[in-house]
Length: 320
Image (cartoon, rainbow, N blue to C red):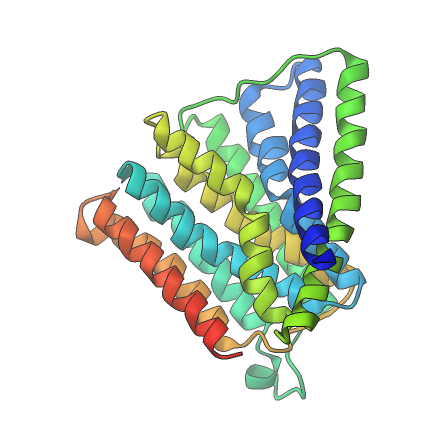
């Protein structure tokens, strides 16, 4: 019971903290006349992925590497299958040609890069699979390249989302209060969440990798799910694609990159099946956009994606 309360309380603090930090930082940036588009591409994008970052870094520091990796892998699978699937069930998603030809392939590339970094035993004949500090720096280098690309397309007017963020204006003192409170919520809530999730894993006799791939991943992906479904209800489901692409690239390149540079991450029970599902989920997102109906993810395809996620989760639980 205590672990469940820690988990729920920690998640609530994380989500509130991410929201406060995002609003406060965006208001400060707006005061310095930074454009809404740049704020959206940086601060707001960071805010929705802050839960994954906090959980993964704290898990790495606490020696729970499997939870750190499982959180990222599970979140990306959840994003590609459940978030896109649920959004398409609400309203079919039209996908821009640039997204199909450039940005979704970047998501597939990020999954392949992680697969290579995580396969020391197969590729280098090492004793264990570890995402090392050097792997972490490589992932961070990819993140810098992705950010450079993002700003380039923004400047060229190629950002297909077509919407600027509506930034709340607030006094400086209130912005500082939001930022400080948001950071405190993220850090304290993250610690509670990791403690609760680890405790549940021990009490249920379930590995930290499965908790990370399912419960932790789903919990930390709630901001992306809420954003995407709300956008669909407002008749703008295309935002879900940009939301998922940005989050998935951020998670692998930045979150795992930071976590691995803090402390090398042994893969443990997270194996090539999980990494293959990650790659397959990215490929499925690309395929349903291109082939089944030209650049539109329909409700039927959304149901297929949700079904795939349910089957994968059921398999993980059945293996325990």
